[in-house]
Image (cartoon, rainbow, N blue to C red; front, top):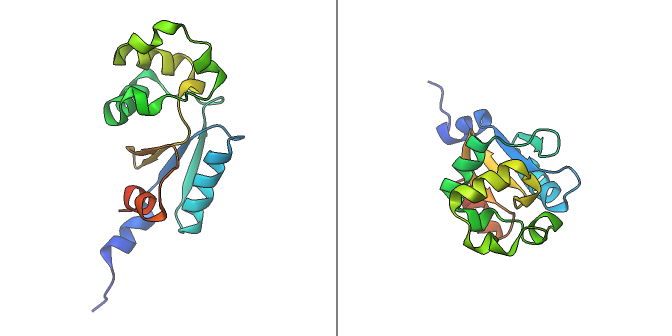
Length: 131
């Protein structure tokens, strides 16, 4: 009888999608980390393939709009002062119309949002991304 570890077998079939821009060092770092773990990564460049409002809505539902805000970018700084009072729906519209407002990377596995940004200890990142 063959013996195998189901969790290892399942990992082979999982698809990781890393959303961001190709020139972002944090996106590169996340992809490198995933590759070093032997995981397959599909990169999605916001500039070439921006996320839909529906996809952004799922991310906001999962992470909240505050966690998704790229507050260090020029797009964020150019927003009106009223942005501090915006609803989640207003943020969804803003993120969908200008993906540079979204913190990078957003990482999904098989369509499930796992992480935004790439900070934390090795243990925290491993737990969030691999389980």
